[in-house]
Length: 446
Image 1 (cartoon, rainbow, N blue to C red):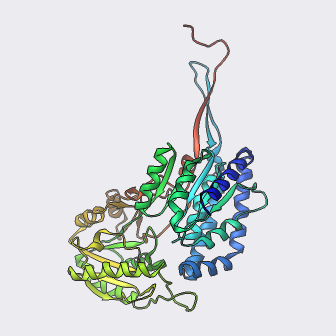
Image 2: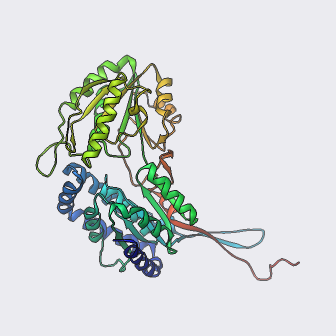
Image 3: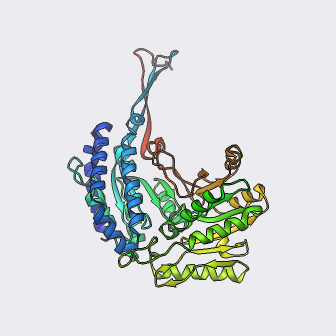
């Protein structure tokens, strides 16, 4: 599609807005439940498409579908938050209604790395709130996104209420700018890199349109001296290697107190040796491939730079086309690119610190602030330290890769602003209005 076709999809969504927004929240919730049933019943096709397009292992696409189904069901539970709230001023007799009203057409810009989950998240919240939705598919997985949106076209959804826009890579910026400028589009949500997110935010600002940005991450997993080391190792491996580390919440920095670092690193390396990556279209392996060969070259450069500046490469790093075997690097430090840059690959980077104070300082030494985790047997201690972390999400004794569609999901600093999930969804995708009814004869005199 080009800009003309994108505008046509937005026009259809605008035409469908009147019908969809006029339906009760209960009726809209039922449509989302039917969508969830249909998605759950059509797993095999999406698993096959995602393996071919982005190299996703079946376990990752299954995880995506499970979470996306839950997102639809959780959004269907937001009906009570869409009800009017009414109060009366006892002094004036004015009856005030606070109303959450659908904003219009919502544009969701979805990435490739979690194609099912993040595409569903981009449209489910807007739909339950009474908006119609246009999803701008990723250039890296247009077939996956197109198949998903077609799958969500259930009988009670008005024609045009949910549409998809695909485009060639060189058309992406023009298509996004054109859609943001469409007068019917009143909300924009974007999940992707901070670099592109800044451009989306600037375009939205030109049109005074509200946007929600969920951007890059550099998640830290802190392992304190009293941690359950085995549990921390499992969480670190899961967070660093699941989906080849191509998740915004992936564990990019494993910050370990020196007293237990040797035991932790040894155990993590042993676990990583049990994992194998391969192209899922022709092999059965725990991990899939990277999005493309360029990603492998970029990761190799980061690893080479780290080793050149003093890091110890304990295992992994072999790249064959777009397949990279899991990497464990010890003694990562601030003089390395890997310390600062989002790797977005299967790289477990271990940073050794003296104590909890240094652990917090190192964890906050990043422009990003999406997800973090703390491992300690003393949960009060971990909770106290969680309050000092500059991230939107903190997991205590759990992996940095964890989502709950009922909870507010989003970041701080260069990881974006706004929140998906739970009641925050309603705040993001509705207009908040105050409607006041004055009693007869109470108009002030001049």
